Image 1: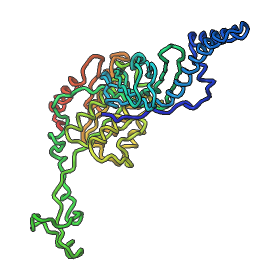
Image 2: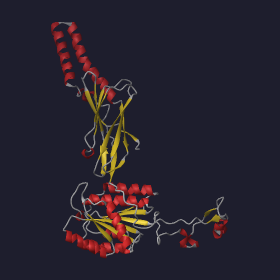
Image 3: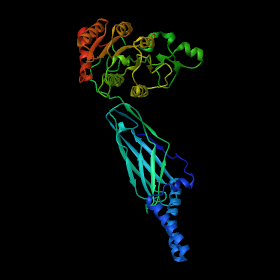
Image 4: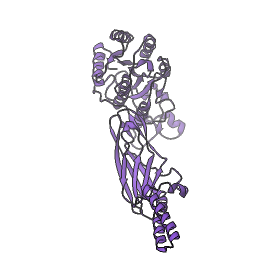
Length: 432
């Protein structure tokens, strides 16, 4: 659950009274005019009683202005977003809390929170008077089918007195950000590589394989097996040291996302590009649950997590990649050379690619990337160009060693994932 964020602040709450008098309604202005006319008539006719009536008529709206002007600066508000990160098509709740910190009751309050049109209509609420120190809370829902990062706020507040004489507005500065993540499809439990922990034959490695000289010992702890005592370190440090337990290194998986503008046609939640982004997010989430160390690389050379990333566990890495996929857009690049350069010298492990339309230049760059990976599967956006052309490019990608499948609109990724596993098993190349 997202925390509560205060949204107090905004325009100068101690602004001149002249601005406050600008909030007089038609009724308030009429009372002022009637009071002035009564005072003039009382002076002209010499009627002191009429003067008292005029003063009363004019004093009422003035008093309402003074009270509301003071109350406006004594109203605090806070917003809580639950949750702050949602998948496309899911709902989030926004909780608004308004508190009267003044010593006098507030008047009628009208709340309006600014939200982008893709999240729905602007919510509006009417709150009755709030007692001194009292608070009110209202809730509304937001939903988006399009991934992205959207601002919520600022909150606009309008106060009105019980007599309808004055309406004063106040706009807060603070706003919150709602992150809409790509749609994540559940993939079948079949594996494109390794066992359930990401350690298949040929990929299960331990620290001990590096040799005795590369082992980093640690201090002896009560209960440690004495057979694991590292005598060389013990003699060097002067205290009992033992070898660390053999710890298997997790298998690696690299998800390649093609963002070239020329590789995709159309726009909208069901466009080929959005299907590719959703597929990449689904693959990242699935491989993380399978125990893999997962990286995301794009055609622009962006690598997440990068060498300077401070994310420490799988949850942080998944959040980092998903946040990047939430706002990723088309790139002007026309090739895969930057992605190839980003993976140079990196153990890419199993390579899973989500590609747009590929030409001869991209095929020439994808071939060497396959050679550096323990296995390669490509889901290629189809249905954009001539079927014969797309079939030829798919065949050439398969000849380069990729397990390539056409991803047509309306075809679930789970079905293609199952098909890829079957093709790998049938060809004798899987699981990786």
